[in-house]
Image (cartoon, rainbow, N blue to C red; front, side, top):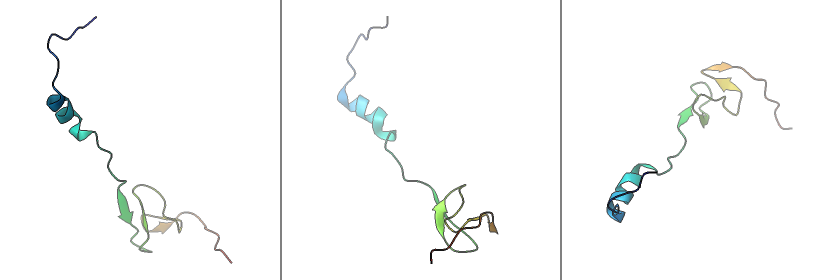
Amino acid sequence: MAVQQVKKSTSRRDMRRSHDAITGKALSIESTTGEVHQRHHVSPDGFYRGKQVLKVATKA
């Protein structure tokens, strides 16, 4: 079993964790409708890469 020889300082520990922060989702704008949607996902209007791939029922 590995046993540390010298305690790692809080400064070094925190420097290592500096890259662990959560980033926001990558968003994209649909070229046809201008909708903002998550990258590589269908937009809320049913468009993907400028083509309609789903028929979305409109609310009456």
